Length: 141
Image (cartoon, rainbow, N blue to C red; front, side):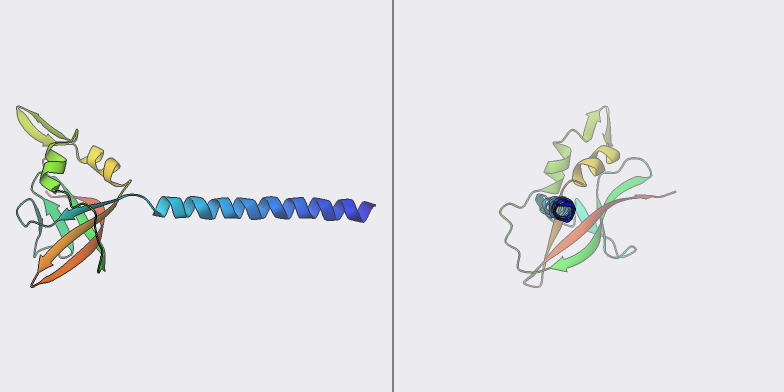
């Protein structure tokens, strides 16, 4: 009788552990399946500089601090449902403050965008690159 109780206890503990591992795996997959925002690189508002390769800046800045995207990887053959205009997206958001002096709430924008997977679309020479990026800031002196 003692052995069967021990087996039942071991079975219950193993079942709980397996369920917890499965739950963690599902949560990790859900986190990875976050929404994706697609923006087109237009080279006027969103642009890449020659000085800092694989880094994309926006025209709006806040003092010496600039919001930017850093290339993580190039993807191919994606089929975005909607491509957003980044300038319109930012300037019509709560992160763009136009009260006498135009200012960008960089921290608020970063906190918002970190909840999304960001893909920049670059078209050149008849080819389309989908650039998965990480958000970042750079401070210039």
